[in-house]
Amino acid sequence: MGFSIWRWLRWVPRQRPDLRIIVYSRKQCPLCDEAWELLNKKQKRWGFVLEKLEIDGSPDLVREHGDCVPVVTINGRVHFRGHVNEVLLQRILAARST
Image 1 (tube, rainbow, N blue to C red):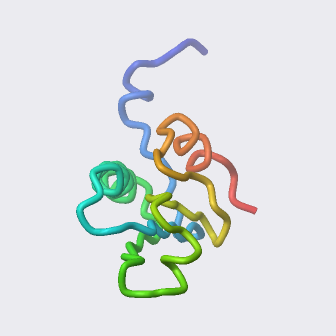
Image 2 (cartoon, rainbow, N blue to C red):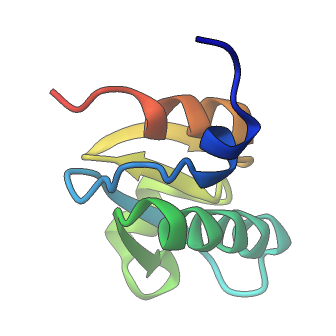
């Protein structure tokens, strides 16, 4: 059984509704916009839950994150700060759910 280009082209990733991704951001933050754009694109393909929280409205979140945004959490655990590594994100999405 060899490599089939047609099977590869038809491959559809399984959906990941078990993942909840939150992007903590601030207004007028280019890195936040970049992270949101990438995650929004991946969300359409993988079907995970995606939320955006602007920290400017919460003194507690501003104190916690300050200018170190975006902060991206996956199921409550921080995975990215300042920049989303697309290769690592892809590995997380493709990993088996536990």
